[in-house]
Image 1 (cartoon, rainbow, N blue to C red):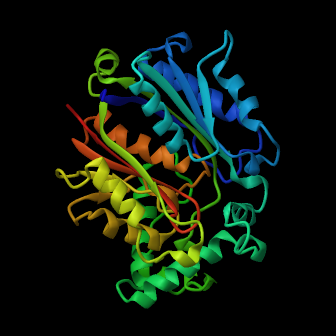
Image 2 (image 1 turned 180 degrees about the vertical axis):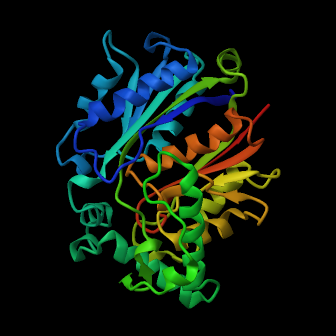
Amino acid sequence: MRDIAIVAFTQLPNQRRHTDREEVELVQPVVAEALEQAGLNKSQIGFTCSGSSDYLLGRPFSFVSALDSVAPWPPINESHVEMDGAWALYEAWVRLQHGDVDTALVYAYGKSSLGSLRDVLSQQLDPYYTAPLWPDAISLAALQARAVLDAGWASERDFAEVASRNRAQGRQNPNAHQVGDYAVDSLMSEPYLVEPLRKHDCPPISDGAACVILATAERARELVKRPAIIRGIDHRVEPHFLGMRDLTESPSARIAGERAGATKGKLDIAELHAPFAHQELILKRALGLGEDVKLNPSGGALCANPMMVAGLTRLGEAANHILRGDAGRVLAHATSGPCLQQNLVAVMEAE
């Protein structure tokens, strides 16, 4: 296996609505900035992969339009996943293992503000038994949160403490937009949005875009002083039908973490893609993260949650800590699907 590293990461400042940008205008600035950060031009990129969903924009093949942002002429070696960009990064990582290219560019974009996101997400459910009932995304998350409370290992105050910490940490992140200092007691006094979840337990609706550049370890050392070497990366999926899962646990995250090597050394930081507060608690247990691991210094998805981008952002934010010299070993996690159905884990280290 070839060692692969993240050498650059950029993101557009997340907003509730980017009313003045189409998909190309979302992506082009982050691609240009990432290339500049890595000291590359587009002709030096061996493979390009993107993550997005046409459902968000409400028109087919929007990802083809977005390709204009990377100026694909002459023709380039390119692919797309109808998922979060974290899975596009995984495809690029696999592509680099082929041995004939040494750099890859990954981008993702999402405009969650164009429709009713909680209803759009119901289209990813089991089409025979669950989707016809139209359960929205927040109601499904509330179902999972209720299962956690009934299991007895977490409380609504625990949920509020997660939200309070993440939104306070998000104040240091200029790309987050739902941030601030909130006292836990004050949060607990708020009304329910969908019981037992309050508004602060849920992610904001965000528009955004992000870009990551990968390189083989040899090429990465030529490009940056301190590449974030991906020591392990894995993703797993759980059954589509919610009734077949124990929603209080995340075995797919646990297995992905084990295969990525999460427990093989001390972790300094973990960036977890937990759109709902109780999901951070589930992931922390599944991945065996101790109290000495700093969680979501960026503020995480509770501060900015652009669909199809937030998972890739967790990988980029975690890598940035190594690129800047703030950490030596980090974990990044991305999720997709209802109630943590699919989970990807990557462990990155400095050399």
